[in-house]
Image (cartoon, rainbow, N blue to C red; front, side, top):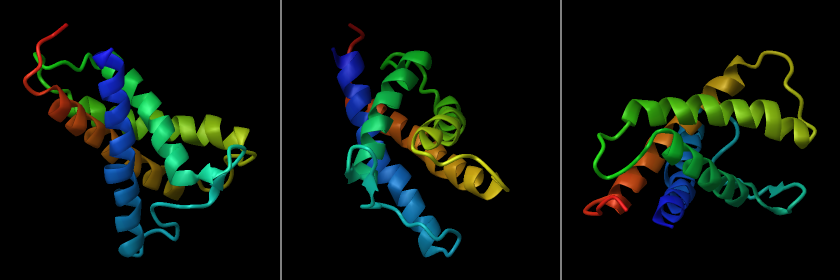
Amino acid sequence: MQKIILPFVSGFLAALFFHEATLALLHAAGLIDANGFSTTPFQPLGIPEFIANAIWSAVWAVLMAWLLRVSPERVAPWIQSFVFGGIVLTAASTFVVDPVRGIWPSGNMLPRLAVGFAANAMWGWGALVFMRAFMAGQEED
């Protein structure tokens, strides 16, 4: 059970503390217009976007923990988590989630993909930070 719950909680927290904070910092630096912790309703659910993002991030963290074999005895896959977040989450958002919401990829995608990669890569790294913190001192079940 801990192999699902700990990564789920880690992904949720990483979305709030790493992903959204990265967006807020990019906004504060004047690099992007959107800012972190968007309360715009996420359609079709109607919940704030940052909460919907945190829930989906939690699900992705379970997959990341399984794929990268995150466990207390193994060396932490820092680079792999950074790349997983940056590439997989950005691709899923751009080419799956947004088209379902009616937002189609078009025009110059590089700025959007760069911001997505930065925020999602920080999420991947942050999720691993929380996973390792929660798993500290535990034995493999």
